Image 1 (cartoon, one colour):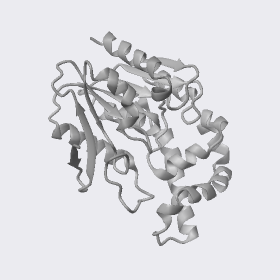
Image 2 (tube, rainbow, N blue to C red):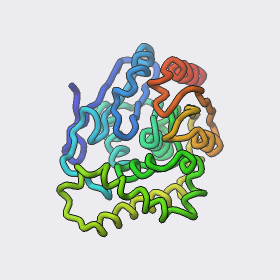
Image 3 (tube, helix red, strand yellow):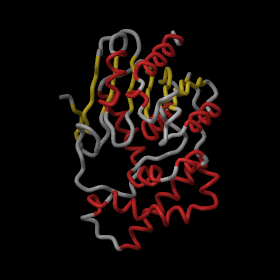
Image 4 (spheres, helix red, strand yellow):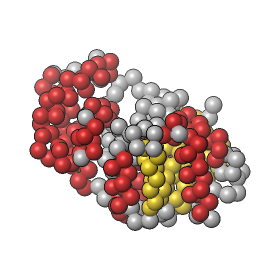
Length: 275
């Protein structure tokens, strides 16, 4: 299996499918706790006409899994750096499209499109949003919130974040129990570190503005998505100037696998319009 070493010396698994294609290169970015294999249904269709590059982020899939977890480390910038290095490693010089899933893969795609606008041909966001959730604590915290809070995240948190933290921190600690085993932190220190991560996420949400994304963008949401509610897709559509929106009925957060025929058709039709 193909691997490349990132700047920290970890082996990251990647796939480089149909590398001799003369049409378009497409980068696939998976979400938190997932892997490149999540896109199996999309790869089976897209590889017929396009070059496909996908990789498992550090700690995911077939890539190396560090034994100790850094609770305060944001994964976002490391993944962006690793993707940049992978593209150099594979000598990708042409423009490419990006397909990102969920609140991590989709957010990485957005930030990459802003950072490298001259290289991006198109962006496709699957069950994504405008909230930066890029490490273990933030993902657990957000996923523990009731659906109505996710729908109106900023409005609700503005007045009740302390109460929400009080209720969710015990569950976060339980979810992290294995990873916390070797850490020498007092209870108060651990709580402070978790709270710092959550407050930083809320601050970054207020600062983030996807209106700088200039490439053609397709946003696909699921009507039954409890992780990234359809309102997030609608808000992204409002924020990104050159975007189109499709909300799929009877589809949750994993629509690319649950409703693969519909998602694949939307993706292929969108790419064809760009020729």
